[in-house]
Amino acid sequence: FHRAMSTLPKVYVTRKVPPDGLDILRESGQVQFEMWDSDEPVPRVELLKKVKGCDGILCVLTEKIDAQLLEAAGPNLKVVSTMSVGFDHLSLDDLKKRGIRVGYTPDVLTDCVAELTVALLLATSRRLIEATHEAKTGGWGTWRTSWLCGHELANSTVGILGLGRIGVAIAERLKPFKVKKFIYTDVEQRPELANMIEAEYVSFDDMAKQSDFLAVCCALTPETHGICNWNLFSKMKKNAIFINTSRGGVVNQEDLYEALSTGLIAGAGLDVTTPEPLPTHHPLFTLKNCAILPHIASASYTTRNAMSALAANNLLAGLRGEPMPKELKL
Ligand code: DGY
Image (tube, rainbow, N blue to C red; front, side, top):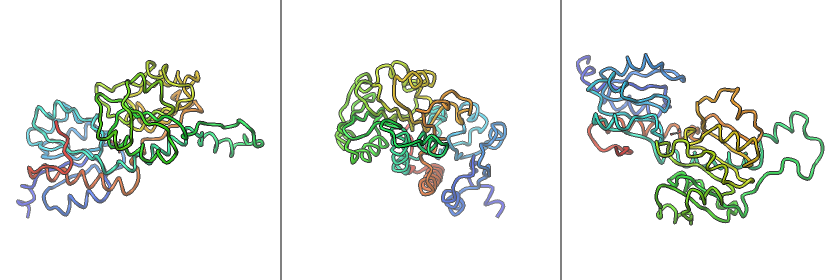
């Protein structure tokens, strides 16, 4: 038994992931795995120790998988499987150089993320967080004609920055709210996706100028880092609502603060920030027109379990040398 165990590929799981993925790993009989059995991230020093000699790593987005970590893992490492659709925490160049294959979890979270994005958009545009606060803290005097007025989706133009699966799913959900027009911008046109939601391709500047609602749905890459900055906000409409459920790094938060506090745009809803968690004394928290959530877009039991299962299946397929259910092309 011991000899059989010791010849199985060694895997380190960097977090207590939801049960479906763990069951898959256990029942596969294919790997011996150790897990950081906690809801908190594994300390870096511990991580660097634990990955030594591993064949596979199953991680979440708080772990930087960079040259230092790959060096610490050593030459056995064949597969990194992240329980996320985002991959900005992975140093793709270094992984590629070493011939390490990468699994991620697109698709299974699309519905959940789109749903939360719509919820955040409505909460921001209709000022729900402010409103519940007013109701319970005595601000509710009488019915007033302009009090807590917001902006409605009917007849609006919705812009999508980075049109992929999630952007399409958001547009599909927003359409019944009688949105007049969907527009999108991206590094190139995406006619197949755009046709699904009858979205028009526009330049970055035109998207800024035309959008009543702007949803950021792009991946964080060197090209998208900080693209939501003064250049964008200064061209947007005064009534515009800015929503980000992708990554905090695409936004210049100082510029966003300036835009929100001076009324350059009407409001922002953020599920992602830099850093995470955003310190409670951060200026953005002082703004009534900024709704901030703690990175919960994919947080449903069903979706997190599906992500965990897919991450486990990607890992196992990779270790068998087979195509992964969802492999990131490097
Ligand atoms: C991801 O998957 O990248 C999200 O940010 C967490 O679900």
